[in-house]
Structure formats: C-alpha cells, structure tokens
Image 1 (cartoon, one colour):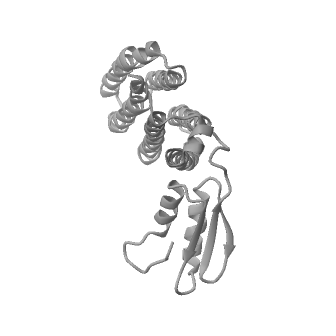
Image 2 (cartoon, helix red, strand yellow; image 1 turned 180 degrees about the horizontal axis):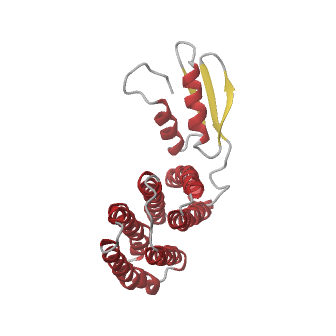
Image 3 (cartoon, helix red, strand yellow; image 1 turned 120 degrees about the vertical axis):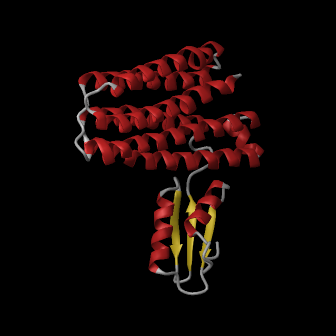
Length: 272
C-alpha cells in the first residue's frame, strides 16, 4: 500500500479493504518519512481488525501481518458471537432508556466496535472460503452458504448500527432534556424489545436447524405481533401528557421495527 498525497486517498480504507480481501501481509510505504498522524491512523485501523498486528516499522515503511488462521474461528462461531453481542446490546439499550442509565447507554455504543471487528473478520473468512477451495472444505461451507452468511452478517451488523442510533436518540433527547417516561410506556417498551429479542434468536435457530416451521413463525406471526404492539405503544405515547416524548419514542419504535425486519424477518426468509 503506497501512501499518496491525493485528496481522495484514505489509508484506513486501503488497509481494511486489503484485510477483507484476505491479505495476510501488508507493506505500507511512503516516499517520505511516515508522519506521526499516519502511524496513529495505521495503529487505530489495525485495532479494528481481528488478528492484524504491526510486526515491523521503519521511517518509511510499516509491515502488518494477520496472525489468525482463516479456519481458527469458524464462520458459525463468528456469526454466533455477533448475534450474541447485538441481541444483548438491544436488551441493554432499552434497559438504559427506561432506567435513565447513561453509563449503560455508553457501554452499549462501545460494544458496537466489537460487532464491527467481528463483521470484518466474517467478510474476510467468507472471501477466503470463496477464493480458496481448501479453506472452504476445511470450513465445511458451500458457495451458497457463503452468500447466506454474508447476508446474515450484514443484517446483524446493521441491527447493531440501529441500536446505536436508538442510544443517540436517548442521549440527545430523553436524557439530555430529562424527559420522563411513564411506567406503562416503560413496560410496553420492555415487552416489545423482549419480543424482538426472541424473534432474533428464533431467526438464528432457523439457520442452524433449517426449520421451515420456525421461519414461518418469524415471518408470519412474530412480525405481525410486534408491529401490532408497536402501533399500540405509539397510540399510548400520542395520548401521553408528556408531548415532548412523542418524537424520540417514535424514532426508537421505528428503529425497533427496522431491527425486527433485518435481524429477524430477512434472516428467516433466507431458508425459502
């Protein structure tokens, strides 16, 4: 990777792209001495990439090496880990909102960095499996499964981003303005979140068990029940004495619906 002075050159993006394409060794070069802020950018970027380490440095070069084997952590385990983190992020995000816990809210946002790291690893593993038949054989994964796993990984990663958006809505509105939330609204938010949490886990089981029955439940019953509960909650919020609560809660509910669609319905739909 040659460091350029071009306005559109993004060193971090170049490193991430090489990582995603499965490169194990990267040499970052510069005609002049590498600047301190460029070294810091390389360091921060490698921290986003599981297994990637700086193994050698000089005034004009930095050598990066990926020290993790493509089959050291299976795709199933990587995706299971992303699922686990994001589903718990969802529960803790709503808990932080209904308990007005800003520390927990900040912790949820921090966890999204680990989701991104695992997503990058997942994409790297998938591309390695597609490019190398031996890796695919050892990973026991078919080309069709690679496509499904990519959709699943992206769906969960997007769900994590939506959860962070929920937290930002809480931080910038409800917490900042000290808006009160009634016990009924808190209870209903918890109820909807628990339904989505269960739906996500059911969608995950659809992929592991290849269950058409579970898929039909997620796409049919669960989706309809969640939207019905969300609409009921919208109606309650509209009638609430705290009018300033309407917009932030509406935003949170929109995001909850998006999460249920992409991390529940879209994943379950892959079986058909």
